[in-house]
Amino acid sequence: MPPPVPAPRVLPAPLRFLVATGRIFKSWIFATLACMSIPLAILFAGWTYRLVQHRAHKLWTIRLGKDPDSRRTLPRWFLSERSGNILSGTEGTAFHSRIAGILRALLGSLGANWRTGSLITLNSFLVTLPGGMIMMFSWYSGWDNSFKKGYEQAEIGPLWGLIGIFLFMVAMTYIPIAQARQAITGSTRAFWSYRKVRDVIRARPMTCLVLSGSYTFLGAIFMVAVSALTVVGNGDSFEGKSSAEIVSFLNAYYFFWAAFFIVPGFLLLKLIAGRIYADASYDAIVASRWQKDEVTDREQKIFEHARVAEKPPAPPGLMRTGLTAFSFIGRLFLRAATLLLLLLFALELYIAQFFTFEPATNWLRQPMVQLPWYHSIPKDLK
Image (cartoon, rainbow, N blue to C red; front, side, top):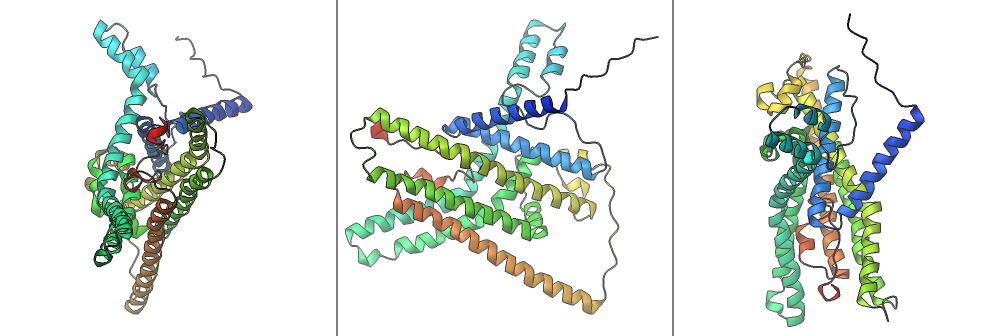
């Protein structure tokens, strides 16, 4: 008779709470430091999108009536989540296979974070680049024209600015849900599935409005963060200080905003978008709006045993017409409100640029949209 398998040791509830709190605090500190560097910001973005994926898969598992995975809820930064299994699988293998296994165990999550973050960031830049470049051109064109008194070309800046703002608004209606779809499915091509992203936006107009409002609200806070440097720089606080002291102050300034604004804001926006996509995609598959062979391989594996709900009987003709008209008017109002919020979000970039003449990269990236990076030291201080 085989000996009984000992039950896994369960830590007391207070100790589990302390361990979980320590993990969250460690991730928060590392994410804050990551916002100071572009390569590390890509790792933080990838870590965030992998967290979005984990939360979405957990939600799908619960709604399918299965037991959720009881393993850790936070993805790792460096070690692979399967490091123990990988190391145990290398026993008795060749030397080079053992070294490769050890590297996968030690750096598995690092590679996954970098791959996920870089691919989603690249796709996001490709969508926002046209609007950002045109807005940047409109700003410099209007600024230079105001000094050169070229009244005959006075309309060039505003007209190009309107075009750039329109393209940016269109991009921002698509990017948040497309980022969530790529993160959750793990497929780069899923980002460009326009019909699926459009279906999610149409199915959740109210929550998408809330998401756009969150971007606008956090964008206003970022506008304050950028503009406040003008007030600090024009005062007497830097008088008599060396370049090293000014750089030290700026580093502390960026660290503060990264810790209490960039990190929680970026996490919040991506988790909201992930929840929207997870809910809408589940309902679309269960209601047969999406066929199981039309989704990605990972979604097929999760939803292969999902029960398809029967379609409810259609209401009478007059009632159906009234419901359709009411739904159309409501959706039209929500879309108009969404576009208005995104217009304010775009205008915040111009207001921040007016108060603080930042580098051109501010037009091409926003910390809450593409990359959570906020650290700009003037070249003459480096």
